Length: 520
Ligand code: TNX
Image (cartoon, rainbow, N blue to C red; front, top):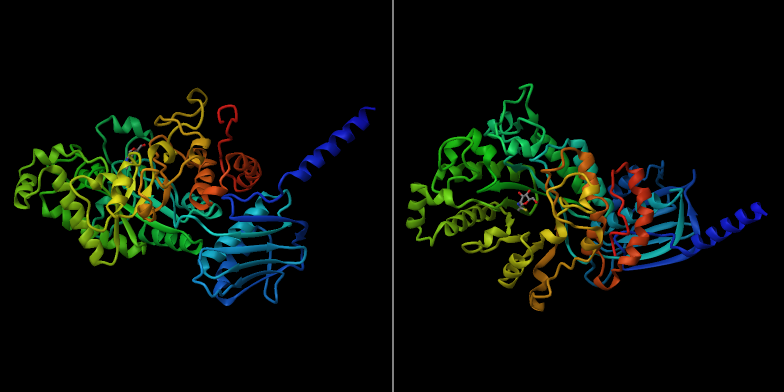
């Protein structure tokens, strides 16, 4: 009797399983049609690709964790689809049948998206070699799908940067915003200014807040108490190449004119006070500041081929410029209204320099103050207001409002969580985000390039902690920026998410598991 009961229970369980989807892709594709049957990867399975997609095929073999033979006709084929209409090069189709797997794309981005969907299907199956038959047609909603990482407050090793990029690619996030400078440490080798990494990359105390509330000393590299690190130019170039191979652009951020304590500690003549440990802001009345910044950006551009260079621009304390005779002289000389005008002058000057070098300037929404530089792209973080203003004026914007996109806040009841900077951003709230603000005129909506999550690391001393804060929230954001608006369903996302815990476990990600009592 007992035994029969167990069998009935098992049978019921199997039936329930048969009713749940076997293909659980995040972000949700435009179209998914499950079919009966499955494709089994075995010793005979080979992979082949159109010559333009050779490297994409290599990536698939490398990432699958299964030895896939290359060549021949291929039972897994990546084909180039040439359509008559102007094709969306990021679009793809994936067909899995009993006999074969095919990915069709017109461009490299599309081929990669198809490959990542396939890799995701494999990694979410109980056996990654047994793939349910399905037909998928897919393309992204937004072109900018960003994830940021602050490596200043805490330095994270290269191996982690690679892992982060791998996971971004898995969820079709295509811009890695690398916050490589801030007051807690300069993280990129600059050949012309060696003190930036010999000293400004190293501080006392592993605990950021303890250091921040102390006299904020920076130490020489090699000092037994020095905490920190930096990336060499070769290492940064390798990251760029690694990301590019996975369809990801790396946008570097060099903070100015605020958040620059570490630079001013080693080059105090670039601050208004002229002394270390006093100010966060560059002196904008001093031409040496601009010479320094242009020298740095020249090396940065040589490493990072991205169209955009992010110059920060956030949270500068303008009072220092008020008290500085040189800054006041410049304000008068250029007939600027006030200190905001001075900051705007500096940003415009940097923009001219970047444009002359074939790049575009991106900055936090404070760059609106005193008048936006003519071609600047704005990252709207203090809510959506800055983004709406900039887009209304015809500027491109990336939406990163704190209330929806700040992954440094709590995702659950704080009394049950590791310490964070504060705020509350559960998974469902990330999922609910709509990047095109309702208040924005319809004919300006195209200026919203997409959205990005920011990962400020004040309270994330370890990579383990970073993973906990980013996963699974970035999965929700990926659906916000990739999936068609009308395709989004929180209930459906929650169901698909269950299968992704398997993927995250296989990739050894320290993810947070949402408590559904706290979510709607
Ligand atoms: C504000 S967001 C900052 C960062 C902090 C963050 C903490 C932005 C442009 N600036 O420097 O790390 O808040 O949430």
